[in-house]
Length: 308
Image 1: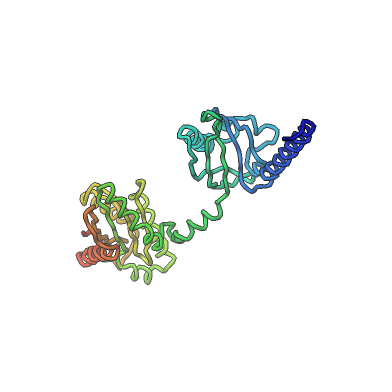
Image 2 (image 1 turned 30 degrees about the vertical axis):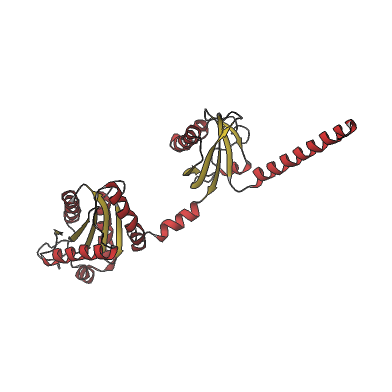
């Protein structure tokens, strides 16, 4: 059993250990290349590490102690605060992507984990956020699945998403539609008007696709050349056909001259649709073949039309 005279020595050793732990923690906070902060349940920042110096609106003298809605524009602050509230109310860590402006006024995306801080009785009194800048990685990821000319998704992304969307449609008991479209007599258009004008036609097709398929979950792709695809859920075949007709009409309505595309004499689209109902067990290749066959029928049925 320790002698009473050892008590001061033990207390001193414990204090030294606490001071060392505090120095290590402070060094981590000051040098970690991530944003680390805490907020109380009213949204007031109670701690922020030094890396916040990179953020637009940061002032070392006033950042801690200010409310999040005083520090950031409302469109930035609202999603940040919403995620803090979720972590506190659900009493669990949540993972989200959040955006803030840097001092150079560029918008950056952060991968953030937010988790509740609780007292000994399990009562939440604050939240902590740890955020890492993923802007460059996110941009690279988007570039890898985006068609440079049209800004639509590319074929690589189509291959990735098809199976996911088929599973989702089956789970939700909805019809998944694969729409294929290409520009009628596009080779003749390029031969007559030149490839720069041909690129503008492809961009116009992409614009019409975005106008038509703008619901959450609608996916549009440039498969290659003048071939495009849309993957979307609907209540049934009639709704899908109506959307395809909207796309056809949008492009025809642009009245882009194309003397080689008789009898229309303007740029037009042919479209083929394949329907994947929840009970269908066809492979991705088989479904694509069905849509391609429908597109073939549209081409040989006069063009500027929709076929199933």
